[in-house]
Image (tube, rainbow, N blue to C red):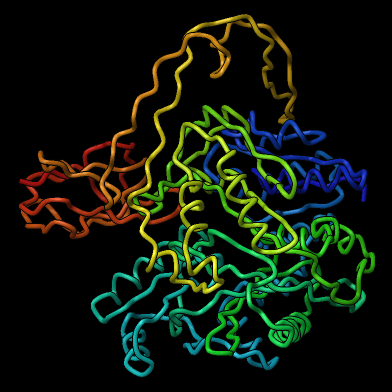
Length: 581
């Protein structure tokens, strides 16, 4: 394999590029117009423009990606995670166009990508799933019948989904219709498929996932488990390996289940099997047919490069190991996202005006950003992954506090304060974790928001580079220009100022009754219209940003005297949505 095109962006593109360099393979990056100056484009051996900023026109544009693969002479394509990584049609198109697909067979992606089909496959392999309806829902009435039989809460989930996208929880019959409609909207936004199904929602369960590898010669190996219970909005926040408190018996049992499922699916490459663990029982959730965001902690504990293994498997080689190695030490990954934890973890896109990563023993940072990078509303809000490893869990926690305090990020709110708060939680420290620990027992509203960024004023002559494109391929040209001095240079800068405190509801409706947008996004639903009354704390509308739905609530009671938006409108941060009197 002489060259690999990475059909992705950000930190996972950087991660794959590093693996190709370790193997002496030429790397080919793609980038949207918004990502011209992104880190992954300069790290790759060559980079090609794949289209405009919206993902649908660039990183999800199969035709454009295949054209670049052909023109660049790419021997193989690695999809990373997200975007097209679990798209069976894309995988098949890659193979049909004569390229090597670095991932599982399209048939396995299709089987596991359809969550209803995957549940049926798991049951046939003797792997029990969470009780649910193994068919696509056509109306909310089906959910009501299921809830009456199994009780609340219930989970309405995207059939084509994964990673918590398109997942909504209904705690009562009053929640059913909104949860059903919202899950279908997110499923359509993320996966272009609004199909949803329902299953019982297990409260106070642990989210356990396993890492497996299968080669094309029939060999399979289980590489331990990860605990991913700490979540908000059904999105993982902290992941660790091994799972705290797990016995060898529990580890062996979940490993056997995972290998059985992989073999039943005809799996090849790296894969992740997800379970809920409750009252001594493992319940199958889904199988992620790609490299996982949190694969890093498994690499640290088991000493194996999972991306390199993916590439070797795709090239027809045998697994480098055939038996589960003994884990060494402990590792925890902290997702550093552009989110404001004090405001309910709402996305907070913007420019990184300050950025400095931590270091030292046991510290690894996987990122695809530098100072000046933009965290855009068009893509996921992940900035970086902080991976902390030590001889045991206590040492990791101590190191993590040091590393998180060393991390400097300015210009956007991040999850760093939330992580530091989690590291003081008694239940977390004791290993008593569940999927509801963060949202049900932790209060983040008191966390201070960062100050506004330092604003440089002076200028100096400095070397700069300009990106140009010739025939769609990216080239970098050096030049000299007057530029503003970077923060921390000793030059005079504008004074810092305290950021304003926002509402805990994500929007604002102060004494003047103006409800405003907390971030840039699109209005996807309006609960209340002009002339109707609304109570303080009652949902007013739903704003979609970074493909996540955010409910905007009223802070005062009164009548909506003016509605300034309609469904489908794109609004900027601070834009007025409605006026209450």
